Image (cartoon, rainbow, N blue to C red; front, side, top):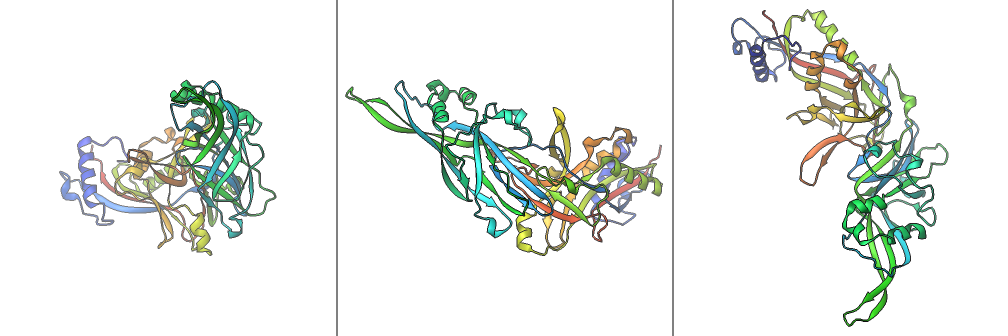
Length: 461
């Protein structure tokens, strides 16, 4: 909670209590003096800094999603083209299926359910998009949980569909599956249905790819497939023994769910041309792997250290009551379009390496769970996003400059609240939706800022 590590513990506790009592008052220089012993006097105040922010893209982010599969393409004149493909499990509806010894294949088809779509121009709502569906050849384990992890060697190059399906937006389409893939389903044994691990060892899932867009004109559509609503129907005939002992050959159907529990959304963006170490009036924010506001922890530390030196505060104990980032934006020309494309909430993330430097998680700051914290909800009245990063700033200011590295840098990205089946919630990068917005840059009149509300008192040795 404080800037200096050398303050006595008792004084720290009392000073923190004093700040709790007065943190809602900005500039009363005498408040809190009766709450600490002796002659110590707490001084409170605020300081607003111009934010040292840049625009950068990130190599990769986590893609595992428990809500929806995302497929499609979208092209924007400013941000460029984004593409989304997706993979997910095939699982049986029943754990007691037994095809028997006399099974004979009739055929199989996939009912692909598109629950909602995202497009910016009304004339793109019903455009045709060709997709290809492939069989995964590797398990959907942790090595595939990044947006660039599914490579050509992860799936069979021969599609499992009889032809290349075309989708036109919301609704369900019937996709005939090849005899080869249907035969693999029919070859499953009773024990494969009883043990889910045996099942997914044989049937690893499907990967849905979208055809590349033709040309570079703006437009396109993204399609959202909610998990649990698409099915594979396997039609076969087998011998059935009746109660009287007679044997009858019957046609029957076994169903499987496609898209269950987890989707691995493989997506790519092309907004790297918007990267800028000295952005002007505009600051670009694109979801997924797109360009984002980036704040160097080293630059932030140097800015605050320079202020402390300038004010002669090196020998003071300092406690933060609040640290707030503000990202303004200008009134949109088209509110309907703005409502579709802007993120409802953005927040500050750190980038954590996983396995290699090019595979990274974006993790929201712990401040997101602080009570009464502002966590980046859009403020339409004031046209600004406000982010509370108090604990992060306290840690940054307590960390020696030589120990600060890129792992403490901040990335500003869309935030999603996730609720699990137990009713518990947590926050994560929104990697299942696509959003973008142009924020005000550092040279704009209403520009990004960091405001510190703090208390200080002289350190008496």
